[in-house]
Image 1 (cartoon, rainbow, N blue to C red):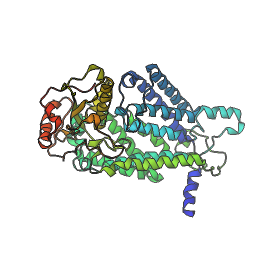
Image 2 (cartoon, rainbow, N blue to C red; image 1 turned 180 degrees about the vertical axis):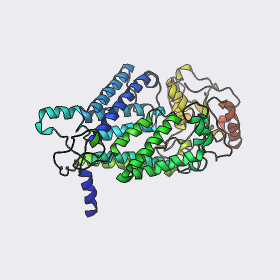
Image 3 (cartoon, helix red, strand yellow; image 1 turned 120 degrees about the vertical axis):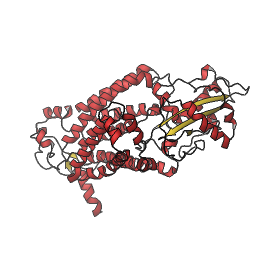
Image 4 (cartoon, rainbow, N blue to C red; image 1 turned 180 degrees about the horizontal axis):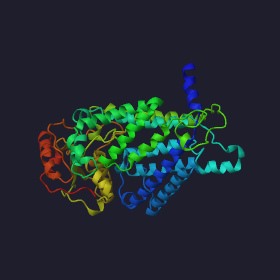
Length: 500
């Protein structure tokens, strides 16, 4: 019990609320911008008339049934983001924004991105803190009501601790994901990105792509992800971590097309600003004078049992769930997509490919009726090309639509090939499997996903502009020579086109 007493006292000790308030303001502004970006995508990505991919176990999550409802939901999220920035109704605003953003993420799995997932987690955790104790409308109105509220009340240190722990988990698991043959030994896909950026005209791209070996970038990214969490933990090394991360994110923003993630990551550094128990922060004290507490504050009361339970379950999930892909070894998640999402496997692959659907009706015909074709969002149509899970969902939805039209015994075969990190093209789905009746396990790798081919040197970099169908013919021919089956009959025929 004595060993647990000191950490408990540290978590309950009073801390300066200003850095947390500054982070709340920055986060609210960024989420307001994100809401506007969602609004621009609403008609092309979240339109109710489109087919939407879902995660396993979440097929019940759908966009709202009318486009005006979708847009109304986004406007509500924008108002919530503004409330977060202004510090009025902060907790319900955070929970409302997190719930709305999660709804959009889970209703279109093809649009998954790690930083979208991070937005949900950070906003949820921010809603559990007292981030509006200062620099907020709530604090402003409280000052008018109470004369003794001239100074901001300290917040318990665990308000910072939960946000810091989440950031540390992201960096550590990003480092674990980089412990792979492709990243550390082959510097892939870093080598491909540098080659592509060398002629892009972006700042630094041409110089770095032609001079600096890709292995330097690959190992630098790995070592930064691995060491920065430990540098952030200790106050003496925290400024060094800040300098490394800011430089790292600025560099990435100039070299790669990763949107505004560098801004999000830089804003998260505010929760690591040193705070002084019972006093002002050592940095913000110079920027915002006369903010010291009137007297040292006593330890805060422990969080209520319900909140404690929620946090324990939350972080147990965050620690254990991302490791599920390790149980699937040697099946590479970058190839199978099993265990890839929600595991902080960031920038791990360059994969291009194509898929063609073929249909065999009981009467021998192979033409798909128009009523069975599936409309997809443009972004989803591009991203689904190499993702076996999404291709499987397309096959399942096509079968359901055919059954509604009275076609009960249709066989659906898919010729899908992909190139992973410069490897030769290889089938990503067994072309002899009737995918319309295949199953997708909740955990584990489906039997209809072949193993990733061993890396060959030198690797060949393919892009979407290459004649992918021509490149895919040879590996499919090789596959059928070794595994003859019903899908072979379609190899020499004109493709039926994807089921959309």
